[in-house]
Image 1 (cartoon, rainbow, N blue to C red):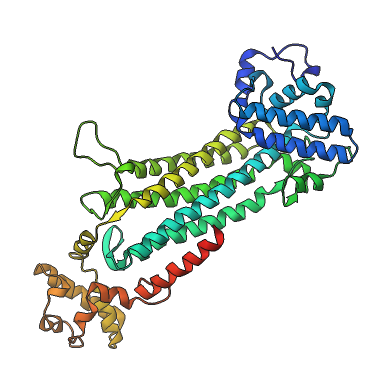
Image 2: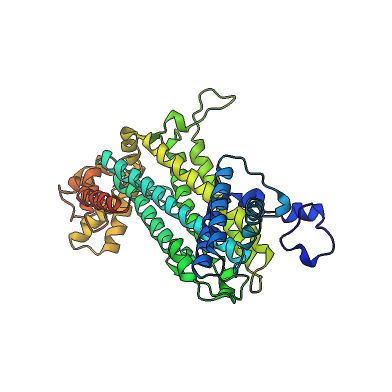
Length: 461
């Protein structure tokens, strides 16, 4: 049984079941680089403030760098007896450097140490996720440029509604991802705060320089209240919240790809490398990557719920419950990055079936609103125009016709305001090009938005 760093007050050893129950090194070992980096910065500050000697600081720093290499090479022996990554590294440091290593924890607690590690870790992961979000956004922009001119039905209530450019539809996902990027950047400002030096929650009597360690570790600011600093997990929950919204966007995309790849729509072909077959039905080509993305969204939502539930009843300041923040946080990071990467690569294989999209435009009277707008421009109150067009649609439907199949004489049964120019209005391309209001689906608008998006991505990637 290993000697505990906190064992001086206790008369008996920790029960082996309690050790197994309370350890976290099995999952928090991924923080080893951040832990070592934070410790080196802390020791440098202890040296500069003359709290420890230069000789001890040098030995500790050298020992920590050697330990990092041991872990990198897979040679480090982790022990559940030492509970977490922090004590495992400290134990090995003392083995290597003796009494010098025992000074590493001066003016520091595991409470502020773990928060420093987590914030360093999450800062790096957030920056990587932002980069992946931009890369996925770029795929939508390039797909929009490549397929400019294709028209498909816009669906509302899952019913065919109006003709829109496919590129306009794809750019809607770009807008979602752009907002996701903004959310992560805003979240990052609250992650990027150094808690190092707040110790167990009351601060320290040693003459430390918190600004020095914050600058050394690249933090933009230091926490202002030691109690809040060690008990704060807002930044973890906020990060997972941002991930949850991102995953909601990916799940909506996944739902559309699943629908569009079904023969009932048949708008797209997903590359073979991102689909699977059936063990019994040889004809099947299943959109499993999209289905899994949709499914993994539930996982991230669950992680957010776990974090919020974890924190909701905790009194100030630190409580051991907070150890349970790591697994939902780590799982969210891994899940989100993997979903982004697979969708980036999958979109590169996506092919659109223009003829099938054109077929889908027929049968839903998707230019009916254009006829109502046409009448409104001729001075008919819109509500009256709406009612008139409803009657025209009902008439055409009973006769098994599309609006484009009707003769002028048939249109004029319902309104004498309708002339030959109605046939320009009810073409699919005419409908699209007429919608040139800011944010509309016209080709000129979409070209501008593609150019704007490319300029934006060039700056942010």
